[in-house]
Image (cartoon, rainbow, N blue to C red; front, side, top):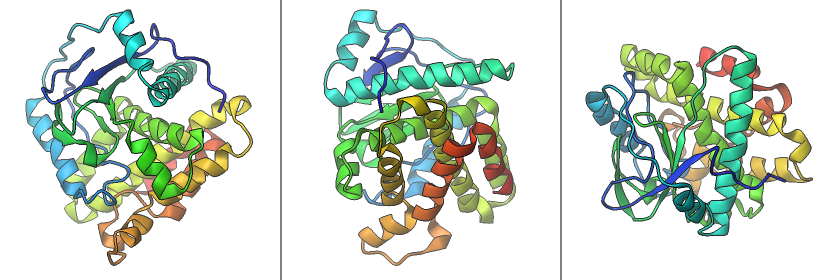
Length: 290
């Protein structure tokens, strides 16, 4: 995908390490939502319910938003230039911010950007609680921040057999989709539905994850002119690799649909295509059906 270079004046990016102190924005929201479990959670052996527990802790801590000192443009430039994956991710964030801000403006809805933090240690703290790189990329609604260890991209390539750039961009766009769900209130609605009907908690989480896949596709569709030949296939292979059924199969586990939290390979591919072909409005029905 032919993205413009990153623009640190249009993104909030920093690092977070073992101390749990982040460079850049921090904050909280009054209505905490379901945490977005890592795309490779089952592959890495992490219990998705452990990830969901991050939000339970964050829900108790949430209060008035607090804004910490943002990193300087020089720091952000250095962070985004630290390695090719970081540069690519920052360029994706720049594009995602521009695309979604325009979409919200067209619909007359207020918009705010998420922050991006590159993980620099195996274990670290977030506003949603303790976390580890084994969880893979995830979004924390408590401070509206996407956390990414760029080393995950190599793990994804190993799972998907795919080293194309769009496989990695799909991951960023998926986590960004969870930010869209947070600021529109969809995540809060799903959390309420889960509390009201615990037996449907996993199914409702699947709906959230598939909608985030759909939003990733919608972003790609809005930037269709920038897609390279084969990009969609790269994304579809990545989506298939991190389907719950495929992850359980790779881990040598029995495929158990009742334990699915992100959707099957086929469902994830279908959701990505839905957004790309029909835009973000087509994604609304996913959580409504869920």
